[in-house]
Amino acid sequence: MLKNPFSNFFSNLSQDIAIDLGTANCLVYVRGRGIILSEPSVVALNKKTNQVLAIGREAEKMVGKTPSHIVAIRPLVSGVISDFEVTEQMLRYLIERAKEDKFTILKPRVIVGIPSGVTEVEKKAVVDATKSAGAREVFLIDEPMAATIGARMAIHEPAGNFIVDIGGGTTEVAVISLGGIVVSKSLRIAGDKLNADIIQYAQERYKLLIGVRTAEKIKISIGVVYFEKEPNKSDLKEMPMRGRNLVTGLPEEIVISQNDIKKALERSITQIVSEIKNTIEVTPPELLADIMKKGIVLAGGGALLRGLDKLITKETKIPCAVMEDPMTAVVRGAGMVLENLDEYHDVLVEVEEIQPPK
Image (cartoon, rainbow, N blue to C red; front, side, top):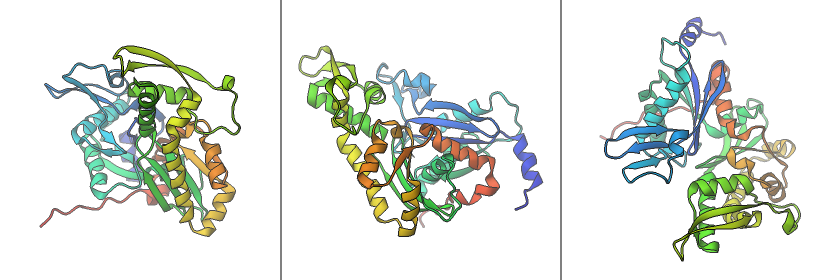
């Protein structure tokens, strides 16, 4: 395919970017420079004036610590836009940060990763918000497709690739072959739900009320979902958990172990593994033969949960491995598409024009 010289000329005048617009984190890739930014998907707002006070890491520091007229919100829920105006402000901030050290004449072209199960209305909301935030052109890519490209798997070959992308809001399970998604399932159980499970377990087991940031910290520090052999009590990692005692109303600190976290996450992890099994059941047998050789690849922040790859291998009888740097899989894949738009143009998602009701 011949490249359009004018397209190359114009692309040199703009700073094209790829964005992984995640429920928990946003990552930005700039063409020719790589990943330049990773920020929490949090915006702090003054409710009295509707003014944005902080975005990203600065806003995250305020979660659970603000006076009544200031709210720290996450404008994306389960990978889709729940607050259009705030998402637009966040996207504008990300695009401006990407452009800040390079003079550009044209607005950028932007590729945005979206969950595979979203509706046409939700797709259009992402396109509209990104254009309002300062994009010249907007392309969408399914997150499991982007993660597969980011894992450097050969997506255009007639062979099955099995990807499980566990993000903040959604878990995406997909089988990819010949540049397209053959089977996909999107599950709204992921990192945020696992945090909620830890909060609920602390309340039920220890009568302790903890915040989301504490739960996240515990999950990252000692989170485990499977032991290959039953560990000795002395081998289990422990950490203090601080919160408010629901009986006395006073602050309290208790020490929890990996066994506690394993119990807390059990139900949600079982549902994720069950969805992987369901996907295997509807995968064409020829592709399944490829997958049995190549294995299941884990991407996203949830892939870092200790023992998850071993649990999936045990339950599915298919080898499972965590890809290198799983948290950046989607944005790296979207970035590779951005660098080679002619080669990867067929993997981008079409957005249908939505007609108003007559």
